[in-house]
Length: 75
Image (cartoon, rainbow, N blue to C red; front, side, top):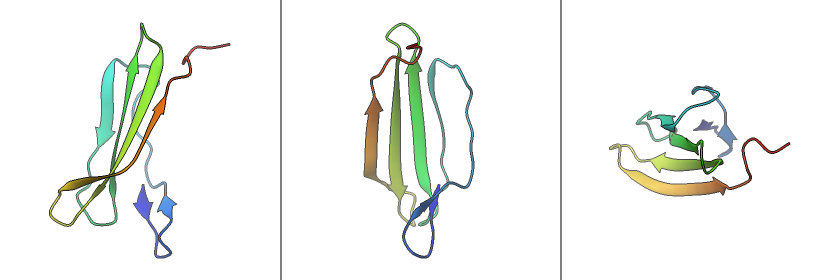
């Protein structure tokens, strides 16, 4: 994701696996890019998504964090 000239978040790349244990993410250290990560726990069946804004020096400040606790395999 990145911020466009109007200040809106813009999806620029999709990555990760459909099913995984642990976490996955990407770090692009530029003022316009975000660090995102997600974790999936097979036994507890939840997905967490974390979004951080990066400053020009690569320092991270929390911009938005969302926790999705709905069972991932609910029918």
